[in-house]
Amino acid sequence: MSLSSSFYTALSGLDTHTTAMQVVGDNISNLNTIGFKGSTALFEDVLGSAMTTVTGVDQVGVGSKVSSIDGDFTQGTLETTGVNTDVGITGKGFFVVKDTSTNVNYYTRAGHFSMDTDGYYVTPHGQRVQGYLYDSTGTNLIQSLTDVRLTNRNMAAPRVTSTASMVLNLDATATPIAGGWLIGSPGTTSNYSTATQIYDSLGNGHNVQVYFTKTGAQAWQWNAVVDGSDVSGGTPGTAVLYGTGDLAFDTNGQLTTAMPENFYTGAINFANGLAASATTIDFAGSTQYGSPSSMQSVSQDGYASGYLSGVVIESDGTISGNYTNGVTQRIAQLVLADFTNLYGLAQEGSMLYMATSESGNPLFEQAGLGGMGTVSSGMLEEANIDLAAEFIKMMIMQRGFQANSKVITTTDEMMAALIAIK
Image (cartoon, rainbow, N blue to C red; front, top):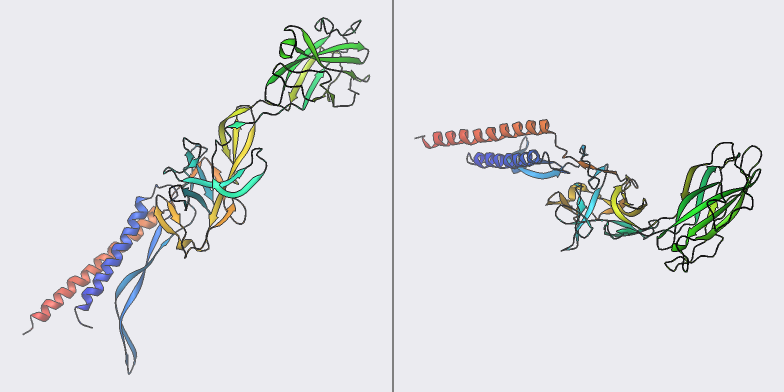
């Protein structure tokens, strides 16, 4: 090996340390990049020559080169953002996003997502987040990877009332009304009244007034009516019977009538053309004590249609919609991807990775299953960069670069001395 070879040896050292410094600089510059994963440059030696001598094999190296730049996929700290469409992963896995212009899937840990104008769940660059969708009822999950669109069910369908319930106390000291209840004068022939609302199959609400008339010592009759303005062929201001029934109590004031019972026992077509649906009423828990009649609770299981007002993302990636009618319904579920060899993933910029032959095909799974991590809503994963460690690396690379520079300077002096020999 000639003296000039040490020039090339030192130059290779300068080159490798320059590359390593570039990696360190990239790590530090992305210290605050959401979902960023740091890298480390690994060196290897370069063999120049090897010759066999009487004492063995003499080998001379000619410098170094970068053998690989490996990513660091350790978990970053989760930072709270308060934006419920932001999501972070605790544990293994990548979010799956698709570039709709190329139909190529990418993978990312940066979960800063939002809804675009078409209601798709997207990255800041418009790639659509992938997942599984629920059917229109929000009960059956269709496990076919597709774009997550949060406004594909911008409205929640209404639900017809099938059962209502009332818990009340009826005054045991009330005086029975002679002649019983009369639909022509419902208020004056009852001891107490309250109202509830029921919904038809289109989600239209109908007010039902319920009158309670004492008929004996522990006996009451209830009668439910709707106003004639809400009935086909009815007269506004005139009550139309919706249902009727009897209630019996024991001497301790406890209800003895079997529950539930039919709430709708009349024959009504509402003004909107729909026939009233079969409905039951449950008075379980009601009492007859010697105190003024009062209502403790009233409820029913129907509701009107509602508009999407917000979304909630659970730890398993399930995205549920909150609707203005109080209904919460599942819309989609995020899917996570994992790879046999994470170091084989190709960086594509903007915190996106692409699968390669070295990484293997993606393994899709729901969050929390099959070893996958869980999803945290309203949080983002910070870069996994240890600034102190990067500074140490930077100083080491600087010393290595300076040392290789010194080799070049010294070799130059030796060459000058060699040339000066006469």
